[in-house]
Figure 1 (cartoon, rainbow, N blue to C red):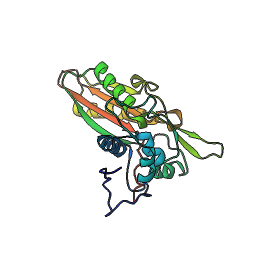
Figure 2: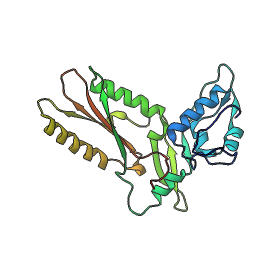
Figure 3: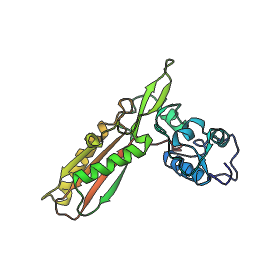
Length: 221
């Protein structure tokens, strides 16, 4: 993969270094795929998850021609857990509800239909938002990325009507809805993200919280 570099917190990356052990995650894997394609080679995010090292990813890459696009089913299938996913799944207790979340400002004029449509596009594009955790014959965890279209974003979206509520009441309503959404996160059922939208119905935009099962990042120290 000449001309393609992975930024890491070390002076050099060896051919047999594991992308995820160096701190790579699902977002960085998409960036890596884009850089590889810019260099004229075709790989997919799943190739990064499955092969992981520069040497193995390069062996899986194929030259692109002008009309080459992403192959059908490019992000689907099973793969072994990344180091952080294995760390999380091997911990005692349940992983249901464990999440990272962020709050976004939604644009003026946003509606439930437009936000659900945008969320659907995101889920269809980002393979890890269609993740399901299964167990192999020996009981070891296996990650499975389901096909685009298999996740219905409308089922993962909650609208909270904030009309007439003061700041404290609105915060309480969103906190309650967010907690219910958190409890619906179940990786073994393929439920790895939830969105909660606070709609103030004044046309001036609102706030949306997106909670998801953490991606493959290093465990906290």
